[in-house]
Image 1: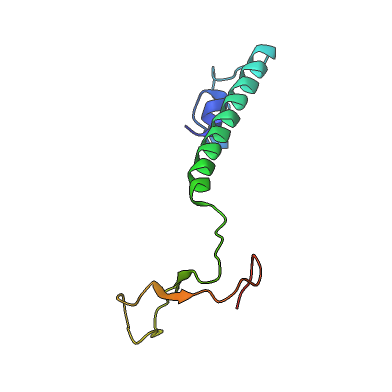
Image 2: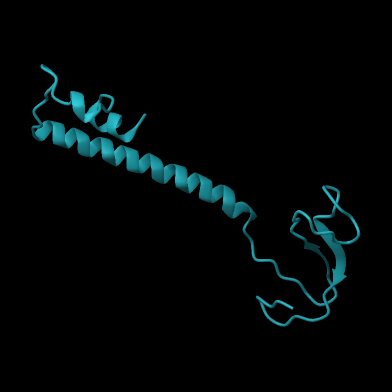
Length: 111
């Protein structure tokens, strides 16, 4: 349901037909409180959905620590038109290796 429909209980119309006879509702304190409650529920559901998706992502998000002597594979991003490792097309590797780690330089070392 669209946010407008959730707030006002009807579908949004174009401004040409805004003032049809018998369609006007006077906004009183009860209507305002009802709209505030609906907005609260919408915000709560959006927050629940964001928290759920964050928990799915956080399962895979861990700090990786490697020691000297460990063997690792390096991810190679595939790009069109570039021949890497002698293989062209969709069969080119996504990971290359294994490579041995010689020494730890720092937590975010590139080199």
